[in-house]
Length: 430
Image (cartoon, rainbow, N blue to C red; front, top):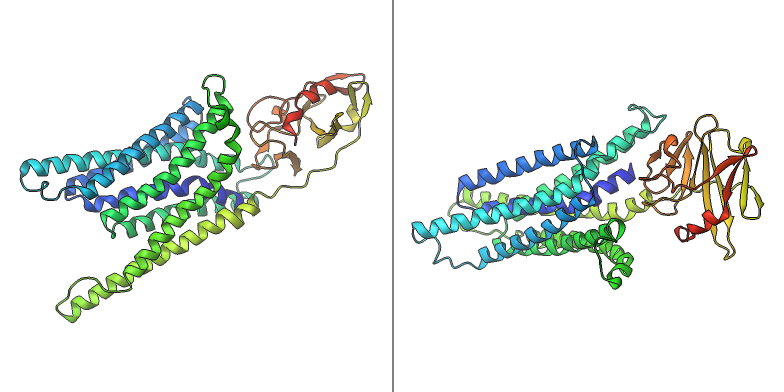
């Protein structure tokens, strides 16, 4: 439950809040037609994102990491344009706009372009982040679990709470900013854009480094500093929370007093109720920020707890050949082994019986999650970091969270593995 809650909030919190900020800007538009168009456009974006997420999960459309790079680059461009347009709107010459029909037309066109840019920015962010989160429930069910199991229910509960927290954060940001000035709105968006832009930049570099290193060259210094950038990305995430906290505190303090003129007690009570309602929204934003902060610290720590690996088993070593008798690994369970090279580094590998005399042999590490290893849960082989259940029939094959394949052969009633093949993957293990 904790892991799914953390993953959803980490992926969707900033995109959803940015969507709320963009929606809040609609209050400054004088045209009701433009407001209705913006609402309909956002609804269309939501539908498109869900449809694309479903098609990607069912693999009905081709999708690879180059599409993610395009979305991230587009979000950086549209976000920058939208931030500039926001500030132009703030500093515009009021005397020039709205004096005649031509000026009103220019103002309407400018507002339309600004709204369209904001929608495209939100669409790029959501198309990048939502499909990954959308696919999570399809991987909750283990081989021996059912949809009515306690574990599946707990995972779905954490998953839905994550969506709820992100949606409420977007709604609260919208309510507060829609009652704030244009300058505050532009300032908050600019600050959040810097945060999201840094995360997008790190994502672009990470994708290129992992998938397109040969096609797209990145500076050596940037590639070497990628681990530090990823660590900084986690810290930068808290910058978005601090921006919202500062907004909520300022909004709360501003409405500790009544603003506006009144001529009778009824108007006075109305202004007091308005101020009180705004303070409540500010308090709600602070509550949500506190929740997300706890989620990204305490809940994240719980979610990333690593299960203790089972001890390594013994094997026979003859020169550069490791021999493991078939009867030792023919019980259908996960068997872990560790070979230590001349440098004293332990290189782990696992063996799992598939069907009959078929065995899955691979390193106790994968391309995605590193050397955290795999453990056994109810006769399932599970990744120790992402909690994905392995299909035993695919162990020994390349791809996804599967163990990195390790060449082996069956001979003389046992499995033979060459230490030279183990040594080739030494760098995978710390």
